[in-house]
Image (cartoon, rainbow, N blue to C red):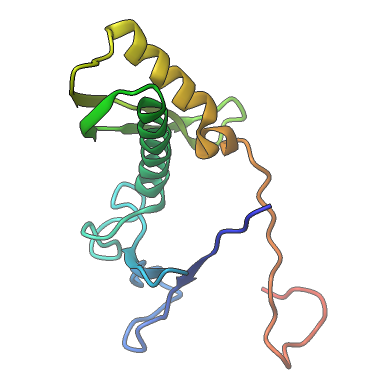
Length: 166
């Protein structure tokens, strides 16, 4: 079994109020390899300037994770079959809508990969479609879309234990 980690860090600017909901949603994603990415809520969900349109929002990250996983599997499968891939570009699109339970969700992600090949052995349209089908079946992220999500809060030392207030 493998584990993957991500830290999500948000700090309130002391000059900003909080209870009026006019605080910045900008935050930081930090990954174990040292990469750091600016995150924010989507301007579609929280209006500017509380959101940062230049940062990655969770919905975009979800679409990118699906597209990236699919691409990585496609490249591995193409190499295994002896096809040389020179370029892979995907203009993936996720759609936010109400799901069957009436909750807002990314209900559809459409991958639109365009792949360029070179070499003496090039795949047919049918072979490319088969490679994409196999990549989809193997993609960890696509296979995880219905994963269980568990929340295990970590409480600060000294926080009173008792009924919730507010």
